[in-house]
Length: 182
Image (cartoon, rainbow, N blue to C red; front, side, top):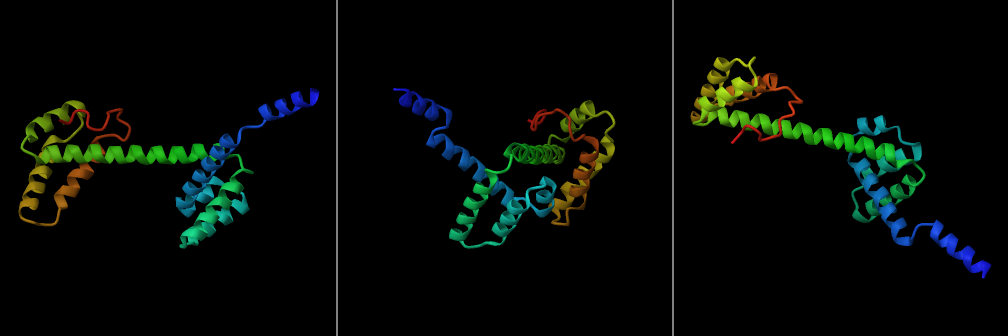
């Protein structure tokens, strides 16, 4: 009877096979993310040598079967490493990338509005939100960008308008992408 109690407490102490497999797959997914990183960011993570070598080896592989086995090896090596700091760093890099993409989309929407028929409305909104904006310069750049587009010329003013918007609209405005843009 005491033996049964000891077995039950052992079973409860260790995670189920399903839970262990989920954890292993999660580690393998982190490993896949590591393989997609560039060398500079890999070095920044400060991975153990064996894990770093395995990741670099996986980057060189092109055969599906070999790559799959290498990913399993990386997952196995990840068990010996504290994955939480790596996961946090990957999340940070992923979020900053998403934020940067959202900002670029926001700037592109402003540029499109400035080049559209509703230019005056867009300029007045931009002037209200960002009082330091040089509205006259923006109007001229938008007008020239439209002319370039119609004449099939290189998009010099189109790019200049985007760069001007980058200067005016700060990186962390707190404005959601699409806010103020109908």
